[in-house]
Amino acid sequence: MVSQILNEMKSSNQQKKLINIYYVFTVFSWFGNGFHMVSAAWLVLQASGSGAYVSMLVLAGNVVSFLFAKRSGLVADKFPRLGVCASSELARFLAMLITAIFVFFSQKNMAYIILLSEVFISGAWIFFSTASAALLHEISPRGGVIYIARTRELILQISTIIGAACAGWLLEIATPSLVIGTNSILSLPTAFLCWKANHTSVKLTAQNLEESEGYDVGPISKRNVVWVLTIVGLAPFIEVTFLNSVIPTFCRYIIGSGADTYGIIEVVFAAGALVSSLFVANIYHRFSFPYLTTAVLATLSLALWGLSSSRNLAAAMIFSGIVGLSGSLASIIINSRLNEELHWATAGRVHARRMMFRYLACIFIVFPFGVLCGDHGIPDYIRIVAILCAAAAVLLVSQSRIFVTTAQ
Image (cartoon, rainbow, N blue to C red; front, side):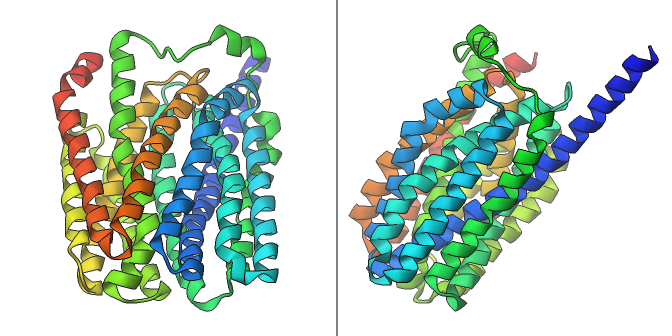
């Protein structure tokens, strides 16, 4: 009896340690991801002078991520997830380090080098993001998934936007190779932490994979909820992806400023995300999920429309703050609710399916409209995203009854 109690206490301590490690490496990895999205987009714009090349950068990353998304889900459910995270981040470190070296010796070809490297960086990132999302279900105590998922989303949103803001400032004072080299170093802490903690992780065997084959997450009503959340969750994801790809061009050609202004706008985004993180902990269970999320998505849509009409820094900062607040809040609420519906054994494949839809949407929206709108048509580009967020709000309201059904 005493031995059993001691074993349970030891297991509990290991689980708490693993959760803390999970939070820490989420900070490093997503800070690095935000840093990469901004720095790569701005450097490509600087080297090419065209927003079309930035759209090509986003397209390259999304195509690779889409192609590897399904495989990443299978890998995340078959192999130790911490090991997958460590390997993926190490691969990203090597890809960015090699990119920095090539840019240092051939800066005139920087745009093409970064475009090519994005294939390898995005390939590694999709395996990491899928495995880390699935890992949440593996390390969570019974009944604790929602709290850990919510905390993860808060950390994720804030770290991404702060990383993007820091990139904007560094781009103003550092050489391109130094910026890329700094970005590569940000992957090392995550790789080390995941490797060190890997022995405490529960290892899902091939037999577990065979027993949990498919994407079934429960009754039909629950599967419907997962589908709706997957589709509605496209809106805040596309918003973040679009803004990180078009704001550099927006600052340069519409507002008429440089990377320092880009950094200021990203800081305002981060401030909005921080406010939403402080707010979300107190509202998640106090309001009806579909109607609260609908209101947040509607606010996001209006803020994006206002941002598209901004022609000076002050107006851009105001609407950027609202976009950062509402976009982060929508992402946190939707993703936290989605994590409540998943089973740990199939979480990797369900998250992979969600990522496939996200990247597929970006492939058919980011690149075509980015090219069609041109550098000075960015405001129209942002309005398209605003319309998509409004459509997501309408869909959520029309399907609100399924959330009431599953709650009962």
